[in-house]
Image 1 (tube, rainbow, N blue to C red):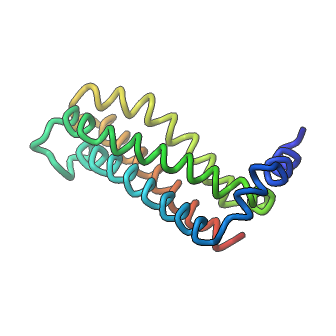
Image 2 (image 1 turned 90 degrees about the vertical axis):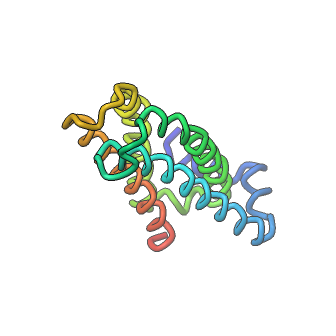
Length: 158
């Protein structure tokens, strides 16, 4: 089964048709949930990344910032995944040819990979003085902002 066939199957499934038949107000709530999820996730990443770069909250230990913002990250990621799937499913085939859709998912894959490996490893060291900490903060922030911007451009080039 090709990716396009999978997208068609998702869109034409009973679930896809059900979500697509719901009121536009429901779709607006999904969009708001998606935006709120990105704000929560970016808030967590921004606070930690700025600390890694030596640009913010320098008097607070990095491990404390990460521990304090962990709930924001997971709540934001959960909102993004749930709302994203609900937004995607009823219109899956319209996303297939959208380059920004694919860019978002490539960036998302890299952002999650970096976050769950390098970013967490560097944050556990609790030192923002090394070149690796600064590079990791810059890379992480760039990837997540890339996800947000690519996602925003999906609607403009659908």
